[in-house]
Every structure is written in structure tokens, then in C-alpha cells.
Length: 377
Ligand SMILES: CC(=O)SCCNC(=O)CCNC(=O)[C@H](O)C(C)(C)COP(=O)(O)OP(=O)(O)OC[C@H]1O[C@@H](n2cnc3c(N)ncnc32)[C@H](O)[C@@H]1OP(=O)(O)O
Ligand SMILES: O=C([O-])CC(=O)C(=O)O
Image (cartoon, rainbow, N blue to C red; front, top):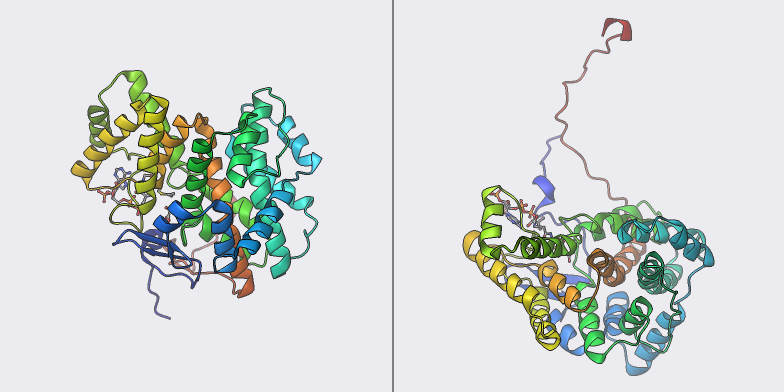
């Protein structure tokens, strides 16, 4: 059998068919079910976008109302999950707590043993509602604050901010957060979604797939880059350094700059366009454009020096910081949004499944290698 080895990191390999998300990396186009992300970011809501991802089309007014009500009604956490959040060390990273809590949620899910299409949709509602709650609740618990009950009259974005901060969010904050959720909702076969599909393709369950996806998202080459970006901005600020000189030194020591580069986009990441604008606008409204200004200087330098564009994670860092959100919640917030895309992909995988099992080109000792008895080694 002649073998063709796929490029390292599977670059450029088309590994499945999917009707969920289409990207043109050269033109900087991202669409969900064919609808341009710019339209969705300016006209849609997270609820409507999630309906689109799960159902393949935009909802009617009554369908959206029913869908939003079902998502709000799913804002329920088994007490055992709250016990878990209270029992882990307050120093635990919110991302590992989220991963563990989603795994535990599987055991208490009423559809635990059912991976039919309908059960997967029901689980998708619950996971989408619960992931946001888990992130907010753990943050309050670790800070010694009272737990805030979910408010089912609020949108998904507003309810998260309410449960996180214990005060009703402003319209500006809610809108900005809602747009961030829309922008992060899906991105074709990114690493965490691929991980979810590989797990789902063994006919394992939705919770297992999402637990694995959260683990994949956590890494700094993927969703973890938003947190790493903010750490860089803080480091530059604390050092009182010039951002350009700081980054120049990082290049000189062959370090990567978080929030730049992308496997698929060879031009501006269309999501960065919105996050840049939001970062600037929110900073101006808050009377503090420090992080935005610093980000812009870095962006211009990285672009001129390395021809690398900012990705979705770069300006989300300063956007979330300006919204008063703690740095280690940035990647969990990515998960709060991306669950909608992960769920759509798990459903799509289960609806038309085949095991995902590629081959590896063997580079180890030649076969047959001798088995040396232990006393002779
Ligand atoms: C939501 C998301 O997941 S978006 C991506 C979030 N991740 C980051 O922001 C982390 C920083 N970026 C990166 O590490 C990469 O650009 C990735 C992981 C996003 C894409 O990786 P790949 O497609 O495998 O590109 P790869 O890492 O091979 O980079 C290609 C070249 O560009 C350079 N490069 C890529 N990104 C960066 C960066 N952020 N800073 C400096 N150099 C970079 C690499 O060093 C490499 O240079 P070389 O050919 O001289 O060795
Ligand atoms: O598509 C990717 O490789 C990473 C990404 O931008 C995302 O997951 O949003």
C-alpha cells in the first residue's frame, strides 16, 4: 500500500464534509450556514445565531421566542455540580474547573444514555445554559461571594453578566458581550471542534465530546491565546516598556506573540475587525484606552515586521478587560460561546457517522525489532 503523509498539523487537509460553517481564508470571509459573520455580528443575537447553527436556517419570530425560552429554562444546575464548584481549590483555573464540571454534568443529565438526535439537541440546550452558569458561579465562589440565581427573563449574554457580577449589566456591556458570543460561536474544523468530532465519531456521548473540546480549547495555541494576550499586555505595562521594543525583543528570542497568526486566514480575521472596534469604543466610553492603544501599536508592528494579522483572540483580550472581566475567564468565555458550534458539530457527526481513524507513518525502529530478554539488557 502506498502511503501519502498528510502535512504536519494536517494543514490544508479537508477531513470531513460539514454544512455548518464556511471560511474563505484568503478573502477573510467567515459565515455560519452561509450567512456572513458581519451581518450576524451587527443584526443577530447569540440565541438567534445558535438557532441558525443548530437548525441550518434563521428562525421565525415565534421560533426564536420559543428557542430563547427553552435556553433560559435550561438554566438549572444539579446541586452536585455546585458542590463540586465549592469543593475544588479556589486557586484552580476556571478552565479546568469547567472541564471537570461538564464531565460531572454528564452523570446527572436526564438523557445520559441517549445519543439520539433529539436527545443531543436537548443536551445542547442544557450544556449551553450550564457552561455559562458554571463559569459565573465558580468565579463568585472562589471570590467568597454569594451565588447569584439565574434570571430567566434575561438574554443569555445578560444573564451571564448578571450571574458573574451580581448586578444588572448595562445595555452597552450586554450588547458587546452578545456580539463577542456571536463572533466566537463556530469556526469550522478548529482544533477543539475536531477533537469533539473525533470523540463523537466513536459514538461516545455529547458530554464526552464537549469535555474533550474544552480541554483542546484551553491550550495557548487555540482559545487560551486570549488569556496569553492579556498577560503580555500586563507584562509590558508592568515593565513600563515600549510595546514595540518589547515585542521586538520577543521576536529576537524567537517567541510567538499570542493573538497573531492563523492556520486558515491569510488576511484579516473578520472577527478581529469587530473586536478591534469594540475594544476601542468600550475603552473610549470607559475613559481608558490604554489597552486598546497598546494593542494597536503591537498590531501595526507585528504586521509590518512579520506580516501576521491579529486573530480573534487579540482584541478580545482588551475588550474583556475593559468590560471588567478577569483574565482567567477569557478562555472559559470562549467556551460559553463555542458550545453552540461544538454542539452543532456533534449533532452533525452523530447524524451521519463514521469512525474517524486516520493512519500514522511509522518512523520507529525497523520491524521486526529484536525482543531482548530483560537479563540481557
Ligand atoms: C481561536 C484560535 O485558535 S486563533 C489562534 C490562537 N493562537 C494564537 O494566537 C497563538 C499564536 N499563533 C500561533 O501560534 C500560530 O499562528 C497558530 C497556532 C495560530 C497557527 O499555527 P500554524 O498554522 O501551525 O503556523 P506556524 O506556527 O507553523 O507558523 C508559521 C510561521 O509563522 C510564525 N508565526 C506564526 N504565528 C506567530 C506568532 N503569533 N508570533 C510570531 N510568529 C508567528 C511561526 O514562527 C512560523 O515561522 P517559521 O516558518 O519561520 O518557523
Ligand atoms: O479555526 C481555528 O483554527 C481557530 C479559530 O480561529 C477558532 O477556533 O475560532
